[in-house]
Image 1 (cartoon, rainbow, N blue to C red):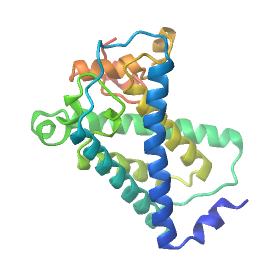
Image 2: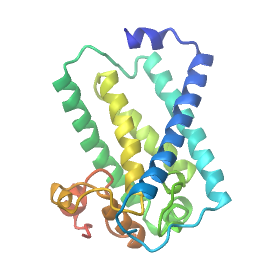
Image 3: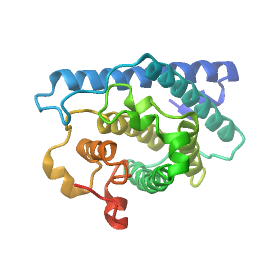
Image 4: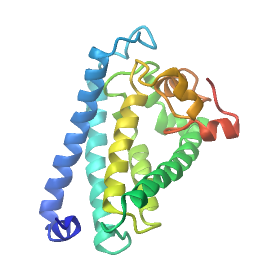
Length: 233
């Protein structure tokens, strides 16, 4: 099946519906995945209790969901305007290389962005709400200031504009991004301890950031924290 041809033929109304359905599915999938791991994982909680469920957090998460829908539509507009070029004719090896490349480039950009929003002035405006979750719960990933959500989304789009990536590379990366974000905000360690030696951004790695806001700014890896002296084991 020619996926690109199929998407090219969608009207804007169909794109809006597609973005609404796909982003809502990913939002619910993240919550469901969190709850499944929390209920079935035998490991002790990293912190004694989860962050309490608050209606205000639920409303913020809905706003994040809405902005993710908008970000996808921005990406579609840039693709239709040929600012983003996609293809589906690459080998499996090329797709894998592209996925790893996107992850590493995004990891560096997100480290820089994350470090910047911890500047005291910017932190009070943008990032403080997320850090009200000193422990985490199933909504923590989505409790973001609107400018943070847009910032992360536009960073992704800017990376996608740099190269004619495969549609499969981008799709797989976006799913990895969701899973990694969910895992990072679990209150149980998802990875075995030896994975820390692989410089992965494990659950405990990000949990440390929620406890100590000046450490562990990375997302997928701990590479940049180790390189720039902000790493805490």
